[in-house]
Image 1 (cartoon, rainbow, N blue to C red):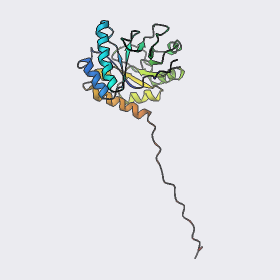
Image 2: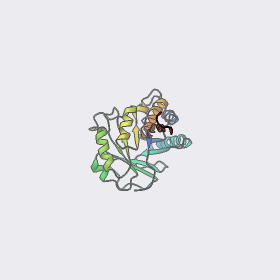
Image 3: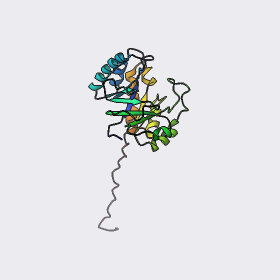
Image 4: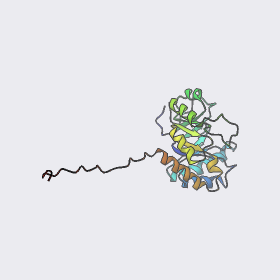
Length: 222
């Protein structure tokens, strides 16, 4: 495995067909809300148009110290890609390479990938009927046997679900509908990013001053 840094925290997947406005504006809002990882899908676009979109999104993320990952083997003039479980094998070389996985068999096929997404964790409106869902228990079982960091994906829409995924061992949570369909993408991203941060932040132990033991009077009993 390479030493690249895997996605962590909130990862936003794009879908311009369900976004409440222009995709670039929606992603800019999500980045403003705290997202630092974005995965560009939009595979139906011509390469030139998709590459131009990737350049715009990279510029937005660069200002915030974020990273754009491109779904598919073509990095669109970048160096981070996310591959499907179907291939290609072996994965191409790049600064960051991820793979979609759904079970232990697919995880076992990983070679030089830097991370894997595990899906679907919950039933999802984006791919209705896709599954069966792993739920947190299944996610935890796969995260334990994975040789690479895992990112939870599928149907994650609430802070409670984010926390459950973190507790199951995911280093990140990838969402599509929760941000892409939101009336306020910035607020939606901020809510989920905050939930992730809270879930991975150790709760400080409450500090108690030591109980002072009263000393006995030197004068003894009177």
